[in-house]
Length: 384
Ligand code: GLA
Image (cartoon, rainbow, N blue to C red):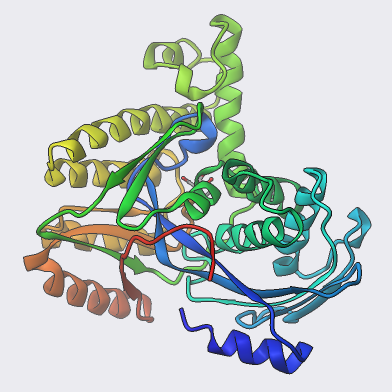
């Protein structure tokens, strides 16, 4: 990404130069809402993310300029004590990362920073994880002598969401942002945290995101989905000791508790069990290059997310329907849902006609253009 503007703004505001750090956003091929259920996910980092220039300032104060924030004041100053939590939402991510690093024994001191990004905000591409990972990585480098390992850096971002931003998210986004590798997806087992890089270059296909521009902000509705899953697990665990997450459960266990849980909780848990099977089927399909099967599973995930997990919206369902009509191999809502992007696996020969039909028909129906991004799988957190 172009770092000139960051450099220029830093010099203008703080009068000197700092060091540049970058972390990416992510895509996820399949395995949605499985991470906090102990399941598998299949993300990859993208070539877009958040970049920050940072320099310790010899005080106990953080001074930060955000270049892309328009809905809140874009400059923040705050201290490092728990009671210093800033009022701006965007600044809470950085404050949370500082606090979580302090909890892990890092001697965080005051610093000046300017940051900007090219990963769209609220598009389901994890701009917030990119922001957290950028600052966690930088603070580890500047104040922690690199002592905190990459897993823990991902957990710092996740804990920031839980403790300072009100989202009880899983580990997928922060993990993908820190561990990303060029050209590779990562199959992550969210129970054991074992992971494997899968080179991903589907010959004859293109991967494209279509951003509905319905801005999503994960919060209560996301947390409610997680609570439903945990409620079903509590009922199952009362009958089957050893079941700690839906990863450990199967369809017969779910049937056993059907009468005890709400219809909503039941549907949500059923979606998670279905998705668990789909991710494993996709792993096998990828090993033999069967992308048509991968695509079929993507559609199944979409309709599961839409009907059973209810995290889609009209705009996203419409984009998936247009993809289906065009004969696109696979299409689904990506990330937490409630807006953001669809991820599409499209045969090269169909790419142009699909993209133009989707943008034209979407604009006619919803009155605004969706954005289209070709996916490039990039590397994880780094110093530039
Ligand atoms: C958000 C969360 C992730 C994950 C996805 C859904 O991106 O941050 O932890 O749960 O939603 O798969």
